[in-house]
Image (cartoon, rainbow, N blue to C red):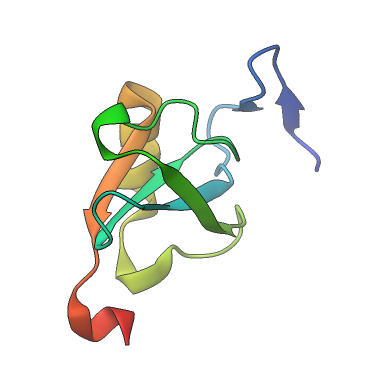
Length: 93
């Protein structure tokens, strides 16, 4: 992918101003809990909700599911390494 490079930690480095690939995870400990992360293995996801299972990805040119804000998600990933969100019963159906 143009503009992406991989560092020693396996995370994708994105040039400033470019959208990042978002990886989506599901917590096995709390089934309604989801997370966005910047790497396929979820290396920075909170340990208290592990194990985490990768369930999808959002390409840089696509919108996140459920009308979640890409800007908010990317800011949280940059600051903390992840963004958590809960899925409602009706969204899961």
